[in-house]
Image (cartoon, rainbow, N blue to C red):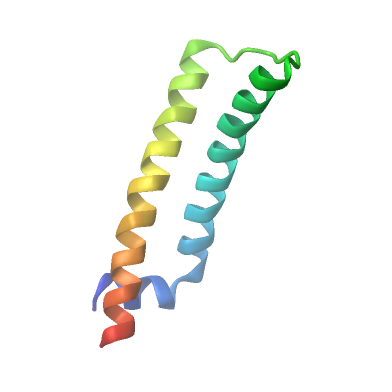
Length: 76
């Protein structure tokens, strides 16, 4: 069973990946917009920020893998 078919059979996995990507992406987008607009923000502890960055990185990599798997499944 290919990755694409696995993801299509378990849509919860896809939604978890999307949620991780959306949450981490929204945090980083907020930081950028707040800096541009001069809005006050509460800085995260460095440990928490590292976890958010790891989550964002994993979300991007897993999103790419998911896209490749789904593209292959669509061709099959």
